[in-house]
Amino acid sequence: MHRLIRAVPLMVFSVANLAAQAPAAQAPAAQAPAAQAPAAGSRSAGTGPLVEFEMMTWPEVKAAIEGGKTTALVYTGGTEQRGPQNVNGGHTLMGKATVRAIALTLGNAIALPVLPYTPNEANAALPGTIGLTTELLSAILERIAQQAIKTGFTNVVIMGDHGGGQPNAYVVVARKLDSVYAPEGKHVYFCDQVYKTANAAFDDYLKSQNMPVSSHAGIPDTSEMLYLGLDLGWVRPDQIPTAVQDREHPNGIQGDARPSTKELGRKIFDMKVDYAVKQIQSMVGQK
Image 1 (cartoon, rainbow, N blue to C red):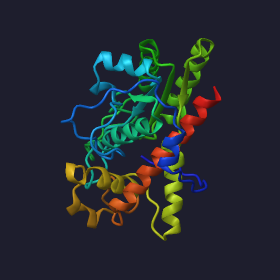
Image 2 (cartoon, rainbow, N blue to C red; image 1 turned 60 degrees about the vertical axis):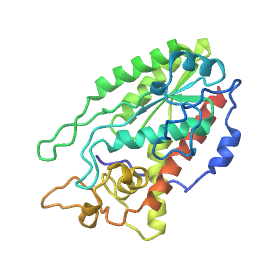
Image 3 (cartoon, one colour; image 1 turned 90 degrees about the vertical axis):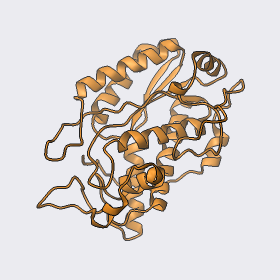
Image 4 (cartoon, rainbow, N blue to C red; image 1 turned 90 degrees about the horizontal axis):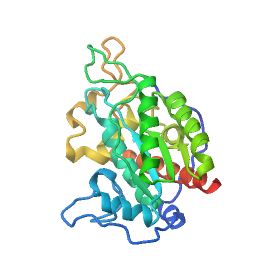
């Protein structure tokens, strides 16, 4: 799926600075069990605070909310073919790592389970995509946000790793629910910078390095998946030397993924987290 690309200034913020600005919890957060390894791409080493709703017990969630983790992060991934070199669940896999890092950096947030389906359409010629309609996604996002508020969160942030539906479902749901809950001091936001702004900034970086700009299954996707999940089977390294768009025989790639590297993957991953954290802190602070 094509991404909407617009030129923006390249602004990368220090994770350390953002973490220092993040609101501190009022009580000690629940700790991950000693045997639990950090998620791929996590910015924390070893064990750390539990920030994934699905990995917490209800008493841990209750204590975390009472201790200041009052922001719920609703992140969407997607199931979509990503060329011959990347697994179909790439959006969701990257989304889990990204939203965990955002929650850890914010310090006052919990990541809800990442939604693995977003607006798209199946294609028998490239059988890796299972999609929703925008209408279905809107209903799901609305229900999840309502449930998060009922659970006790006072801020809900909707965002995603997939471009489909963002101009409509995400924006409309956030505005609709925020108008409903704002009188109660509760809010629903849409964070677009984790996707559109970060990707545009990364495109600008590629241009500055005289590297080709690409979108679906190109350098950004492939590099980030190399960085986060090369050792987890997310990428087929033997396919990267030929991972370039084929117009005569479409292979799902839009652009040229051959220059992809783990180093580039870390850069785009850090950009996504940094832009998201800064935007969320700004939105919540304004209220």
